[in-house]
Each structure stands twice: as C-alpha cells, then as structure tokens.
Image (cartoon, rainbow, N blue to C red):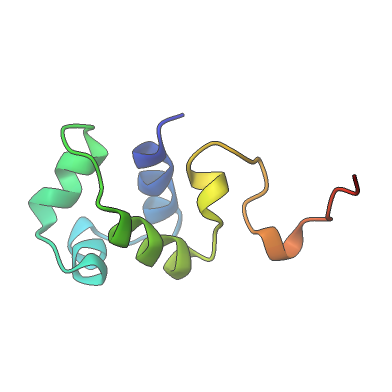
Length: 78
C-alpha cells in the first residue's frame, strides 16, 4: 500500500478533514487532496509531522515494518 493511502486511512480513522491535516502540515487542503490522489509526493517534514501526530512509525507508513508504533512492538533479538 502506498504511504499516501496509509495517511489517508489514518486521517479517516481519526475523523479528520483534509483541511485539518492541511493545518498540521501548513499546506492547503488541495495539497492534501493531491497527496491522497497520488498526484503529488509528500514533503519529508509533513511525513514526520503526521507520523508524530498519529503516533505511528515512519517505517510503518513507508511499508518497511508492519508495526504501527515501535514503542508498542517487541524488539527482535538478533
């Protein structure tokens, strides 16, 4: 799943509007719409802000890990 779709799902799970997310990232609601429709890539600073806001790891959002929040996952011992 694309990271922008994951952010859209997180937004909808929190019952937030695109405008509310736009305010968090200091962008327009049209920009959020473009992210969600995969017309634009997100800036890294927005990815970081939204990961912190939703309390999810960037690894989860980027598809590197299935663990939503690294603080709630057991560490894998090597």
